[in-house]
Length: 214
Image 1 (spheres, helix red, strand yellow):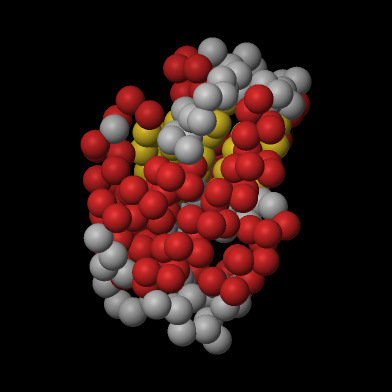
Image 2 (cartoon, rainbow, N blue to C red):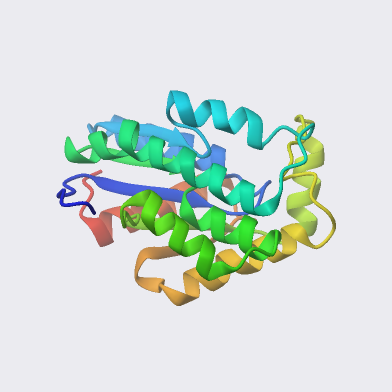
């Protein structure tokens, strides 16, 4: 990690579009704040001035972006996000909660877009300085249900959500494969449950596995 010592806790929420990540990021962060923790909530792509600028470009459906270019743009945004937001917060002993991180690049750009997974991993290894989340919460949901949720919320569709058939299924499978490969730092949750039940599962995990006081 480029010679720096992490004293905070880094929590990431992952999952295909429509699984309820934003809801859980808000609920879990609010519960931790009420318990007296100093919490920084952020997102990817984004989380810093430069990264938010890149976000507006890479997610704009008006742009036809080559998959390799997409990988590099996400990695560039992530490097600045870490330098400007994540690393300073962790150094200060804070809890950082991020909506997406490297797992999304592997799922979306490799499994979804077809870019070599080793290349995606290596690029992000350099971009992050080897920073790995303490826990990655994967919200898992059948794509039919997730797709209906995306339609119901009526939000503007970005480049990821407008990907061709089969893309989201590949993304979901990748998140599950990542969790299976490193179960010690992943928590997979059935996202069909009520939001409150999911929030409680995450909080209980953080308390039991990472000593977070609630």
